[in-house]
Length: 78
Image (cartoon, rainbow, N blue to C red; front, side, top):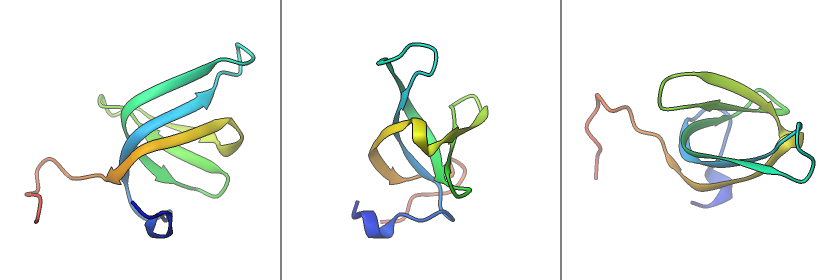
């Protein structure tokens, strides 16, 4: 996905890597998450169970395997 298509109004699926504030130098990997870029300065992350968390962008190391999130109740076009 081209980074120019990423905005704060859409939901994406991906893997999030975060700095672990409790263990300096450690990184936590959150696989298969729904992410939203925003509110400004924050990354909104939902796990498969539906828990939603906000992470300050200062903790975000990377967001990879980024793709459009799809509603499981809606058919995928294409």
